[in-house]
Amino acid sequence: MSASQKSFELEALCASLADDALQPLTYEVLCRWVESIDWTLCDWADHVPKVSSDDDYARNIVCLDPFEVVLLHWPPGVESAVHHHEGFWGTVVCLQGVLENVTYQINDGVLRQKDVLRAHPKGIVPEPDGTIHKIRNGSDQEALVTLHFYHPALEDLDGLVLYDLKSGTAFTCNQSAPTASIHLPVSNYRRIKEHAFRFEPLPEASHVQCNVVPKPDAETIERMIEGYFAEQASQYDALDAQIQKRRHYTAAIDGLVAMGLRTLSDSRPVERVMHLACGTGRRAIDIRMESGLEYTMEGVDMCEEMAAQAAARDVQVHLGSLRHPQEFIRSESFDAVTLLYAFGHLPNRKTRRNIIKASFEMLNPGGVFYVDAFDAEDEYEWGPEAVQQFHDQRLGQQGYEEGDVFYRRTRGEHVAFLHYCSSSRLRSLMEEAGFVEIQVTTIGYDQAVGVESHNGKLFVSGTKPVE
Image (cartoon, rainbow, N blue to C red):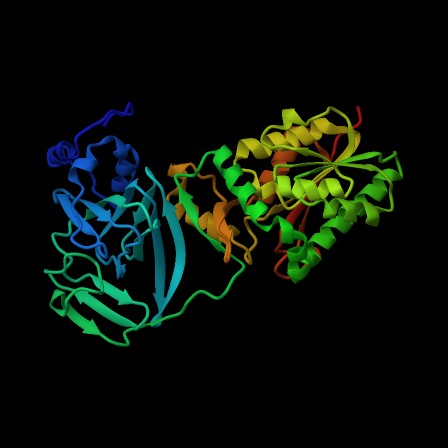
């Protein structure tokens, strides 16, 4: 299909595959081909199978040669069993609704959840050979429709192994199994093995990953983050105090900024400090108190609930987005600018580059910019995992930048966004903006909290040169 996408008939395209087969037919080639087509433009709605039960999905095999193309219809809340793709591979396109793909890994008879990928229409979920996963309809109100591509073609589900997480029983389907479900009559299974494995749930964590495809646009991500912080605005400061590593880390960073301001005051007056993403304003107050200086505090934040708290703490707050610095920027008006615990929440490379340039412009000559960032190389954080997922989940084809991750609080509803940055990339952005005397330090967060360490978050400062 040409790059200029037009509506097309699904069956006609499948019929043409025999004469126009993909060569060589590999996992990579199939994925690229699927990614090159906007499948929402086809007449898929004419081929959606009817479900015989609201508790199970239905399949419509559209094509088996040279690979399988099958359309699935999932009623609200329905999910497949956890099953093992052994000896075949492919990819799945979400056409309607919300697809949640949960992957697992098994080692020494213990099955554990690996990650979750949520797909909206046009979102694509790769399924390499060896995948253990389940697909579920992420909505309890709307039907989910998905289009699957597999090779070798599966004329039936014979030999497909299903896992019952509650009992540890493994079910092997036979040719008569209509779907990958553990709730079928016994006659649909070739073998049922009890105590075949043990499922070990994830340990309780404060946050869990949940990547979203395609990557939402910058404005949508910003709304997601705003909702995420509004959800916890009333308890944000309390959480900072209760979570030990966060308390020690933020105190250490605040101390470094305060020390930098005192050093700066030895050579010039410090009269105005801008706190980008100032949140509740508590850290702005703490920094000023620890510095022992008297200066005007200004701030920018997009969360109305948090900005109100900052204003009550005597921070002059502009309610706005860091994506639009032209709304609050004032050239050469500040002696220091901070962007703390927020750089990673900026939705894309363009926004991150622009806010560093805006910070440079806001500073008086000789002023200093302070920023911290989540390190992509921190082995105790999601950084290395996010980089791996970028490749394994083929996220670059769906708008992601390497290091992007979406997540939510375990007991929260709102999904947020985070970007893990490399020290070399952050230094490059600082240099590009014009900063000199750039210092990059790693401050421990999960280990060696609050002190310089091999692993942790990047703390960076840079000075605007005096001409």
